[in-house]
Image (cartoon, rainbow, N blue to C red; front, side, top):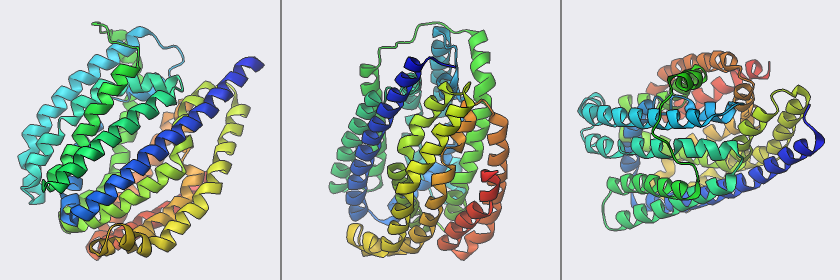
Length: 404
């Protein structure tokens, strides 16, 4: 049992973490929404669809970039300098390899989707792997320390400058390259800021012993991330393959609005949950109370938030994005019904990971991935609304398992 003073300090750090996580999330999402609003007005559904299609392949490779080391660093109770150095150089090596693979395979992916326009997009966005590797360890260190003020500074500056670049390029008629420029400039700025903020610097050393320690935990995280990819991206893949980039553009915009809503309404606390739960893993009663408090707090926000967005979707889309995006309305209305479940289940992953019970989460994710892929494959021929409905129905059918 931790002494009362240490318990109080952890609680204060967690509360400050929630506040700064809220500032980061709301600031980042408000800026992102403003940029998204302008780009949606300037660019069409096909443009967003092409980038979403490219992102399916890139997101798959991204799974293998970090090796789960960031989560291992946050969760690890006895962290040594060799853990950090080994994680950094491993990530940098893998990012170089993945960038090379992505550039080399771009032609094959373009042929698979019958969209040659995505070939140069994939090659340019492949540089993002290098930028991700350059800040992953610093990001994990700051999360472990609950230093969300620094993370908020990095995120908001990156999104703001990236947004300016993207909108400027769109106004100048760069089309799809506006979205590419936005993503790359955001990544570059975030790397520069986090290296400025963080006082940690890698040393030229690599420890096989510490690699094995990180990998023993991180390998399970990679498998979970792979399953999450199929949960999150199999719908994009099937829509892009069977229905084309324009349909994917409509679906992607609706899903992106769901993600923005989720970030604003639930993920503020979720980001603080993993490092906080990890520190309480030896105190089951306090851990249980922390979980219940998080669920109660998010329930007050998510219920009216998601239901309100579903009800007002036609007005929101027409007013904010314009009539050319009205095909996204029914998709948005259906997808927001899943938001109600997030209040209950959004912290499950953080809780299970903090306890080191990776096999539990792995089992749930395997079941979800199989059900999602099956449901999407059946629904995709009926259109994007059917795919959204399949996702929501699967979520509610599996809710009892998550509760148990």
